[in-house]
Image 1 (cartoon, rainbow, N blue to C red):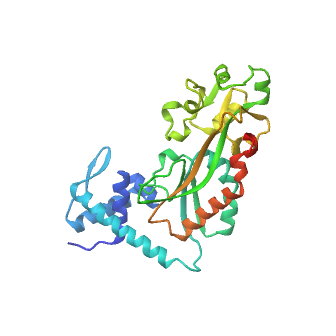
Image 2: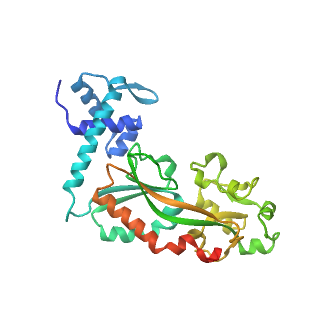
Image 3: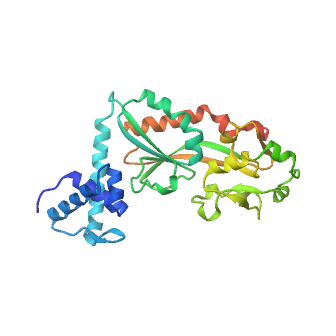
Amino acid sequence: MRRFTWDDLQFFLAVARTGQLASAARQLRTNHATVSRRIDRLEEALSAKLFERNPRGYLLTAVGERLVQSAEQIEREATNFRNEASTGSSPVTGVVRLSTLEGFGNYFLADRLPRFTETHAQLSIELVTIQQIVSLSRREADMSITLTSPRADFYRYEKITTYRLFIYGLRSYLECRPPIKTREDLLAHRMIGYIEDMIFTPGLDYHREILPGLRAGYQSSSIHAQLRATLHGVGLCVLPHFMAAAHPELVPVLTQEVYLERDYWCVIHRDLAGAPRIRALAEFVKDEARKAEQLFLADALIGN
């Protein structure tokens, strides 16, 4: 058996998790030719075929499946060693890819992350706001901000904040439409919301929770597009208060009777949870959320 290096196993794990050379190359910040060459070298060193190549991508063989377990154990040990070696007064350096929901990323973090980068000049931040295409399990992101807390041993989850959502309408829209005094009155209005068969997490399925039979007549997969439609008077929309508060022309309705509560969670793979760059960013996000507690909760709207 020829010798191989830990680097070869990193390439192997990237392909095993993504099933594609191009995806693995993006994850490893290299090109697909290099990934292919490393896989070939590892298979030659082990005298074993690790993948079946087909038009759909790379599929693990039985030998490859067994190697994944050992490679992941080595990966965990290597990560632990790096974390231990980097504690103390070492500067926060490296790259952190943060995957987050569009609303939280674009309407809360985007205005605050620049301050974080000013104090951590050697740390590179990659902010991804198309969460449904990014996977922590495949190591396509280092941290993820979600509406759910996965109860799995290989994740560490930390609550960021609770936030409230209300039904909003443009002031001029509400002035010339039927009055809204009960939940049932909502049925006389066009609702704006997510495309039903594209909702990727139950926490975004608002209308069924508010009133059975309530459906969106104007649908978009983007909360930004929903906000813009509301500002143009298309109809009513369920929006987080921290987003709607920036637009005084939006008026919440039935605030004490109809509001939703959700939680944002920071989810990190346990192998990375102790890394200084990860902890620095996670603590920054939680601290900023604590400072903005009333922006998220809007206690005044519900009479608290």
